[in-house]
Length: 317
Ligand SMILES: [Zn+2]
Image 1 (cartoon, helix red, strand yellow):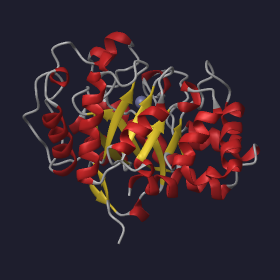
Image 2 (cartoon, helix red, strand yellow; image 1 turned 90 degrees about the vertical axis):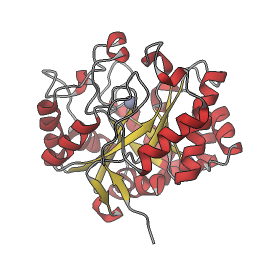
Image 3 (cartoon, helix red, strand yellow; image 1 turned 90 degrees about the horizontal axis):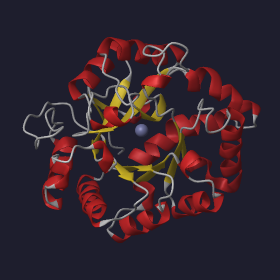
Image 4 (cartoon, protein in one colour; image 1 turned 30 degrees about the vertical axis):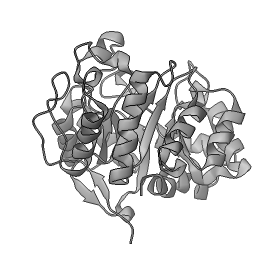
């Protein structure tokens, strides 16, 4: 029997998933990441509800919210946004790039075992709402559904190894998937090997942003051949490339036989959400605009259904 999917308002069955964008951000409070980039703050619940409703009206049903606990994830607000918009939101535990944490954050000082325990408790008992600097104390009943991690350009330094091993342990124990933010200049294949050696099957790994973080398609194909998933979200982000270029990448990898391992999303920040920024593309852009570009490039409806439904289930269950 298939497992259920853990969302912030409770579990849903696989057939309740619907159309899913696999890497979004709908609620981030002001923290270190906001100091680095003012677009990394999405803290107006009413606006986020409006944005989620736009997505719902366009036909969207579920999103994976990729802000990990302890890194300005607005946990209770995610549940409120889900409830008031009707969009299923699956939240993340895990860790982000270390530049997004203040120097006195517990992520730098807690041992691997305690960090793994934090991830496991967020996945199995409930998420913590007070973990952004001090170590977590207060849990709510909403649980995280997957483990978000980040591979920085410094790759597997001892500090990152400790965190990836904690994520690896938590994923094995809870049988949850690991999502990996991949930074330009990093070595995702080396990480895949590292995690595989620690018992994490590649088919439980989702590598994100490689459509802008990596221009070497041999690397993309090598990751896919190992069985991992690729999530692409350089969509409506014209400073990187146009949507036709993005669609051509989907087509190329689908034609190479990997249509069952591709996911898509928008990886929204404040600057790309309509409710926050005048003239932004909005959370409904993928459904309302990019799907047509994909179809014009030769991607079939059946393949789109895989990217938005089946592949998400296979990556998570
Ligand atoms: Zn992201």
